[in-house]
Amino acid sequence: MDSEAPIGEIRRGSRRWRKLVLILLALPAIALLLGNLLLASPWSCRWIAGIIQARTGLETRIAGASWSPWNGAALNGLEFLQPVALRPLVKEPLFQCASVRVTPVWRAWLRGRLEVRNIELDSPKIFLPLEVISSLAGSSPPPAAPAPAPPAVATTPPVPNGPPVPS
Image (tube, rainbow, N blue to C red; front, side, top):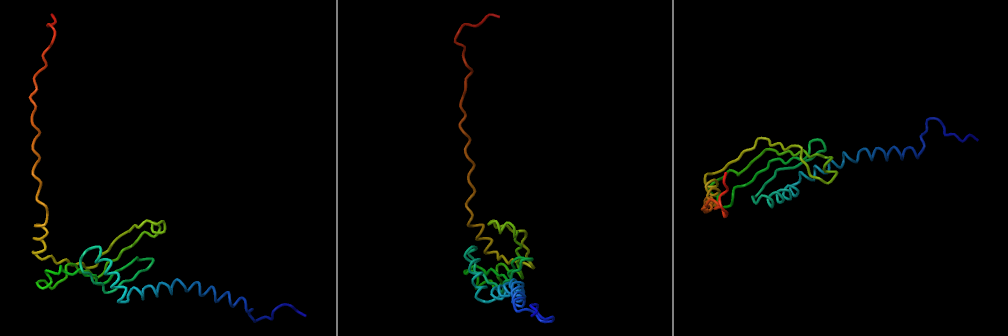
């Protein structure tokens, strides 16, 4: 009997290895796709906006978010709303930006250090009403008065104790 496999047929074990290799190669692309779908969801946009709002103290809105290993993370449609007291008077948001892209330094992140290579703002708009500027100017502490000069101490030249030395 001949123990060799007939020509033209593929062994069952090699098919499994091929499927496993294809799945492992497709896994990063699938993870990237699912991660971006999750970031684009309204729930995650509210979650990211809540984190930014906790850090800045301003109500924040985000239209969408995405990330890639090449371009970093992007926030689309970022808006900081006016303070609550000014919202009836001012309809425009305090800060509005079409997109904010943050490019990290991946090697530093792998070592546990958070480093950013660059931050790009696409068409930022800031709308500061005069009321906000005046409240910022009014809330600053008054300038400190100049410190008084130290009192001058009168010094007298030293008096020799002994008789004068003849020269």
